Length: 145
Image (cartoon, rainbow, N blue to C red; front, side, top):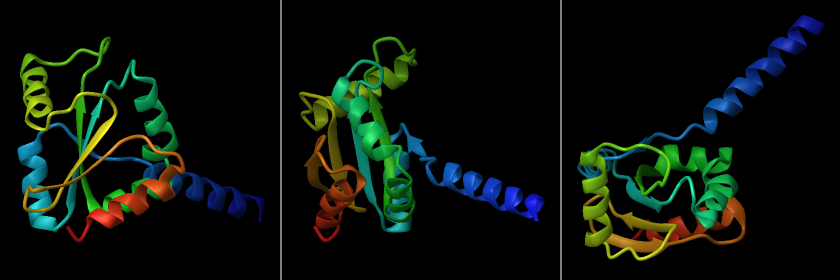
């Protein structure tokens, strides 16, 4: 009986850990192709992942939560547009991120740009209180646009 309970507990932990894994792309063209094929929204996270306090807070309170991961798997193609200070990036990725920042006129972090499956911008979000529930509610409002 103990062995069965341990196996069940271990399985639940593994499922919970896997549910919280997000697949962040770094290429908007790849994300747009996937969104079009799967009829999903593209969510771009403009972030300073290793220095921006609000970005780190958004990641901790929303993006790292299983509830958001489940929602994202069903509804979103995720793109990280990162401007780190310590983490190394290729010259190509830096240039691509800079071009996206200019294209979408991003002036602060975190900025979340949401595109529909056709590539049209349907919304812009940032950090908000309320965790995954509040964030998901805002994304749901953008689905029909």
